[in-house]
Image: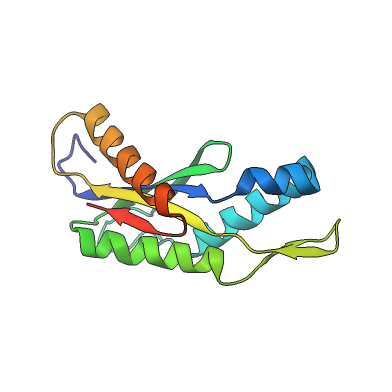
Length: 144
């Protein structure tokens, strides 16, 4: 998208207090939460359009963190709409841990930015800084 000069946004997500789930219920329970969270995130993303806009893509970047590339997103307002949909989908319904017969509430912190040119590394650092801002408050979105 950068090489083609196409607009896009990037979101980084981090599940709040995820480590506590692994500690309390074990790694298999944590893995179950990660799978459910991935499904909830994916459900909020857009498919490819006939206009040529590519589909949104989510990547696991480590632990409970993910990166989401949003082709065609040109401004913060649209980026925030997607981020808020993801945040709401995570925190609105507790996560089911069938092996433990328990449901656990969870929230997510999301940072993001819209590509406006410059160096790729600096852009990704910028997105990461917004995630750090969101993590400081928990269950929030920080996009610029």
